[in-house]
Structures are given as structure tokens and as C-alpha cells.
Length: 65
Image (cartoon, rainbow, N blue to C red; front, side, top):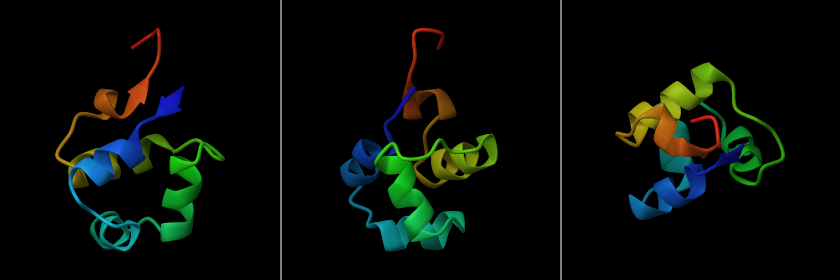
């Protein structure tokens, strides 16, 4: 699974600090998700999708989508 959080965040002109403030997810965790070092939980994906005004399914690529 390829998480597309970085692209969506940049497209909306948000910094990691701003996304942290809206989601309650630390900058460090958001950064590790964006860099593919960790997989987000469903709760984290939901918070990110809500903050970016997107569907969860728009935040990742998968053949099973």
C-alpha cells in the first residue's frame, strides 16, 4: 500500500505542523507515514482524510481498492 498523504497535504498547502494541529497526530508520526516507514492505523487514516476533506480510499493506492 502506498500512502498518498504527502501529495494530498502539499496540494492543499498544509505543513506537517498544520496537519498535526487538525488531526492530533504528531508531526513525527505523520512524517513516518508520509515516508512509508510506518503504516497508519484506520483511525489515523480517518483523521487525515477528514482534515484533507478526502475519502480514506483517496489516500492510498492498492489493487484491492
